[in-house]
Length: 301
Image: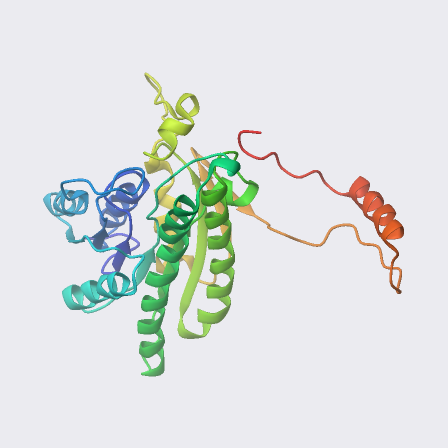
């Protein structure tokens, strides 16, 4: 198959449904060979029957592409290592990793228990770190052997990670952590031929169609702004050789809109060149806040 990812081997986690499925199909349409990962759990992370990963892999093969399914838990060291091994043993290489797996357990902060915090942070944040760690170890080995890869990682954050979201403290914290992980990985791995970027998508998925039912509803006709397929072209481009020298960046993707996020940057500053008193520090802070741009609104506030 031809396309901007022709011949590349791409791993997509959480690819059994929603955004992950859309990404996997879009990569396949651009000539990539896929490892489709999905644990096959429900919206809250509890087990479900059937293998959505196998169904998506079969869908790709039926369209003339190449794909294998992986049903392991990528938030464990062995599951993440097995994911990378699957790509190497099946296709002999790994070129792109798309970290996308996740689920929700929404509660207001005072009602959020420790198990729900741990479960969501584990799957979103640890489930990004471990596949990235094992893929990076492989790419580092390739670079040291004189075979510097043209490797790409696309992480999945959220507007909740950028601005926060009421009732989603666990999810928002995990998605914010993914942004920091992206920046560190981009800085550390560039020497090995690895580019790392993140997307903060807005689309209709199992996680959003209930929480934001009105905004996510499909229209009766015309452009479906919240279709997950709208996000995939940017992800595919970031996962391809065409995105050369783009690394350590965060993009929002929604409907037909792509935005480069500029992140934390120094704003108004005051320097006494000596230690402040508490009263002086407060007065200075209020003056700086009066000069600063107001923050974006937290989702649901």
